Image 1 (cartoon, one colour):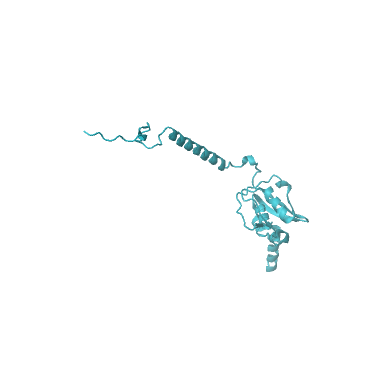
Image 2 (cartoon, rainbow, N blue to C red):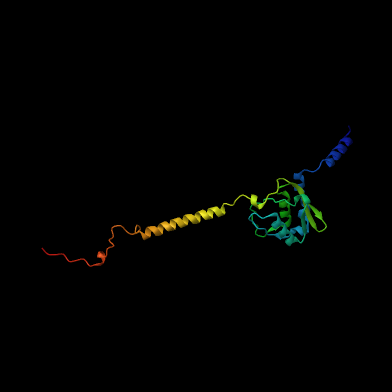
Length: 183
């Protein structure tokens, strides 16, 4: 095999093998370079939903952002999103959405925007499957504890246990002392 044959073989093999998901994620310059995706977008930082993020992106860019048919039930969990003072660039959020819970997630250009393709990594979940928040039970427990402490304090005050010990409360303390009797 001569040098030219090897170069030709390498070129053919590189075109035949599909790009890996990591290579596709790295090659998102088409999103970054799109002037329509330079808009700043604010999102709810506390566990935003895919619907919320896409809605905010549509508002800011005016683009149609749609999901491939197999992603209609895709509900990725974004967790807490760090708030950005000036908001995120639209392309940053598109990259986040394409990477979250998808294998080979990629935004494909359309005449009026983009549509998301990829394979979901996990089965769709509903809000009922969300792990319970610890905030509500903790708040209820603290409120109950504060109520018990307040009740005990009032009860102690009413029964006199909270008054100073050794103090007579029979009214004799209000009479003036009698003078000493001479012998």
